[in-house]
Length: 556
Image (cartoon, rainbow, N blue to C red; front, side, top):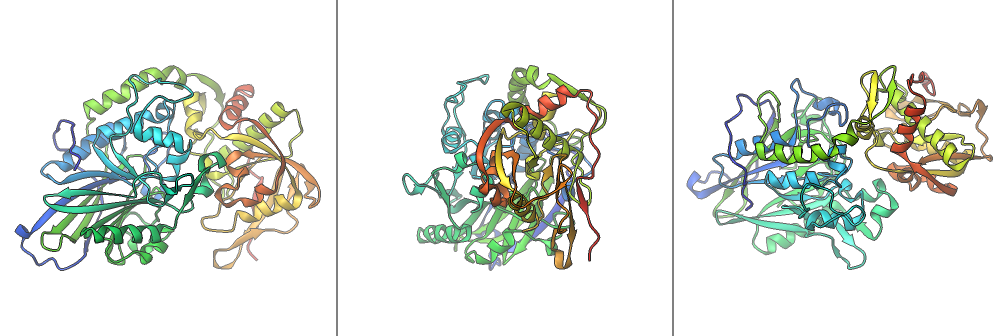
């Protein structure tokens, strides 16, 4: 096993425990001397959040809690505290540890996040969709180390790669026909071997740019897990843990398991009964539940929470006989910062502060991501308007409408006043390229219909020239109000070609908006972050526009 190398510290005065759920996996009447205790400390969806989330990376609504939380130096302390007295303790992850990261990590290609996670003792992690944001070659560099080929070595020390192992059982490199990383790993605890299987969601390609997914294909999650489980059992390994970057959500917090929903609920029933624990992610929600006799956990997001999982292994059967978990909050008022990890973060912060603090404009009112009942937000409107303006300036062409995917907006500006570059980066951290396309009115209408194709609804942010209405119908369904779509004050004409701008992710059919693929005459028009920066700077002091582009009609 991988042992923590960081020095111990005093126990926190108090920990906010969000949930505790126990799963009995088999006969556990054996005496204590006949068992081995194993502790797994799990995190997911860290996204390079080296510091406590503030304006960017907001907590999901159901996971809000009364204490400020997060920061990897505090997470490191909590891990050490919880592992004290546990000789068989290991830290594991369920993907999206990097990608869509704050400026402090992303400015250095997420090398700081990899180094800090290695420093706090992370041993294994599944890959998530965001691990692929910069393509396979860059992800392999994250694992193995070396300088970035474009920028060279720009951190305070040479980057030596991850001190933990990525697992990717269902990600195949087309050039070799093999998995890009090991499909599973085996760790031995006091003579008993435990198998760890790592997978990401099969739908990962739908949320990647064409470049990032090139040369890869992704296999079914459950089928892959079951295949790996069979192989491990053939080696005599009965204790099986899955690290999966796919998840669900609950309505009323981590312990409301009766309301658990989402993609993970479709995967769990397909898993072989030999699986003991499933550590999940992707949805940024925290939960500890029992599903089909297996313990299912997720630790929220951004290092603000930690799953403390206890396993009892039977020496005779070598299987898990009891599994339980607690969700712990990394609370700033009770958990101190680990000095070594804090020093690592500080060494990068010194280098990036001049860029982070550069003022780009002034806003006269907050630019929030709060949505109207119709799905419109002030910030979404501003981003779409900025995209349209940038595309017109760069191409010299007249643009009709801009579309921005809601999942691409990762923060907000909660206060009026000066805005710096770091503020904008928390909002648009992906570095997407603006893409101009020609689309018919019928295509545009089809794109808007696709907003309502699944759950949750994905209401696109749109620029000022577009107006339309939609209404909810029975059984949670919704769709456009016929004849309500107007562009630049005129009814949408189905055969007319319009010039639209979106980002390269959406242009490739991302988030299920496949109709953007019908667009022709593609032209690149700069970056999304640069567009927002320029727009606020040129119009500073900036007053946000009023809502009213998307209207919710009364139900029939």
